[in-house]
Structures are given as C-alpha cells and as structure tokens.
Length: 305
Image (cartoon, rainbow, N blue to C red; front, side, top):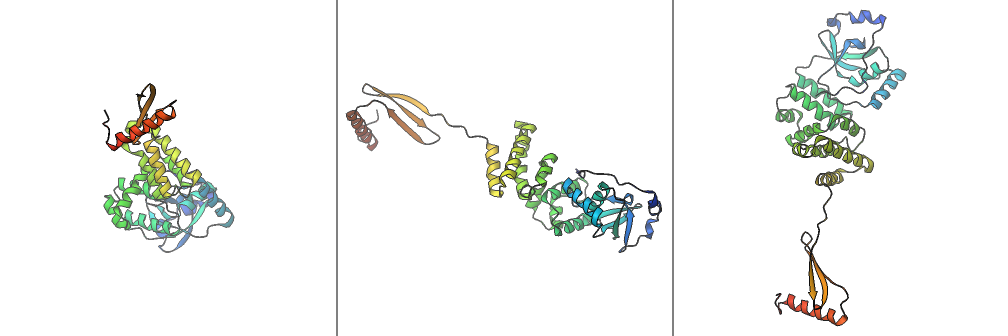
C-alpha cells in the first residue's frame, strides 16, 4: 500500500517551458545538472520516504521560494520523464508553493528496483529523515510488488536481523490516520515504540473485540505516550495494562461463625491468600479465650472439628 503525500498538489506548466517539455530526453547527460519544469519529473515508486507531514512541506516551500534550491535533486531518464530517486519532498514542496522548475542531476538508471530503493534509503538515513514508519509501509509495498521476494531477502539486502524486519513490518497493522499522528512525535515515530503499539492489533483480539474497540484502545495508548513522553519500558507496561483491561477485584468468600453466644464471620480471599476472622462486642475475657483456643488449634493441640 502506498501512502499519498500530504497536501499533494500537481505541478503547473507555464508557456515558456514548452521548449524544455519538447526536448529530446537523450540530450540529458548522466552527471550533468539541468533546471527543468516540474512536469518533466515523476515520483519513484522505490523512494524510501513514505510519509511527509504538511508542516515539513510548508517549511520546504517557504525555503524554496525565499532562498532557492540549495542542492539538486537526483533522477534518471525513463520513458521521456525524469524519475526522482532523491528530492521528492523538494518536488512536492515546489508544486505546493506554485514554483515551476527544479534543478536535477542526471544519474544512471539503477540496475534493479531494489538497488534504487536501497540507495534512496541510505541517503535518507544519513539525513536522519528515515523513520521506522517509512520503512514499514515501504517494505510492505516493495514486497507486494515483488521487488523483494521474502522478508529473508529484504533483511539480507539491508543487512538487518530478520527479527527486526519482521517487527517493523508488523507496524503496518496500525491504521494510517494513527500513523500520521505518531509521526509528529519523537517517541511514537520510533520503530521500537511503534511496534509495541502495533501489537494491540492482534487479529484474534480484533475478532473478539471488534476493530473499532481496538482502534480506540490504540488511540488511548498513543495519546498517553505523547502526553507523558513515555519511554520504551513504560510503553510496554502501558500496552500490557490496556490489553489486559482493568483488574477485577476478587470478592471474598464469607462464612458466619459463632463463639459461644457471639456471632462473627470468616472472610477468605483465595486470590490474595488471605483469611480474616471478625467478632464484634466480645468481652475482654472472651477475646483472650478465643485467642488461646486458636493458638492451640493452629499448634495442633486441638482438632479443628
């Protein structure tokens, strides 16, 4: 599943760009930079980033409008278009901001789609722009399209442990609307915490309690993580508590008893391993006698019956 860019706007073309749009693609040389109209660019299906917050795009639009483009995007020629392998956020921000062109450096066509994705991911990791949430949804998309045949192949190519890949893919169980909220907070955008949230969406639990109930439960967890800035161990405890639900207080078993003419009761709490005996209104001498009697019974000097 691909997630659409937040606030996506289609680029416009002005009259003066007609010449560039009609330019023969073979004239663009690998390693050279060109300023080209936005209509000539195409997003790569194998770009590592999936989610872009509206605030990110707005900030980038303002920067491009005021200061221009600091670094060229990267792209390769395909079917008369330039496929962007790096710079999709700049491309979308330029379109959102009403700009008409971007500078691009032409690169060689990647040998495979996997090579294209892995190069994009390396760049984003170096910029600290890549999140576990991006990884999760992009990996699922790549596997659905057959770019990677299995989790094992994906783990091997990215030099990651299979267990980590499996956990990150589990994040895709979280609904997109909740993912977008999680992206905007340092803790919930962490893959380790996002994975803990994803465990709430266990298929059996959804079948028993219903999807709406589970989504509401996950929303409560995410809200509390953000509000209290919980760390991993605290989130783990919170998720466990929410899944188990409120603890039911065990009701004691009550049995009436008599000591002479005086009435009392014995309460037992099986779950707590507790027994209480209560008499009210006993005279002092009767209290002493009852205590001595109980001590002898417990010492084995008197039978219980």
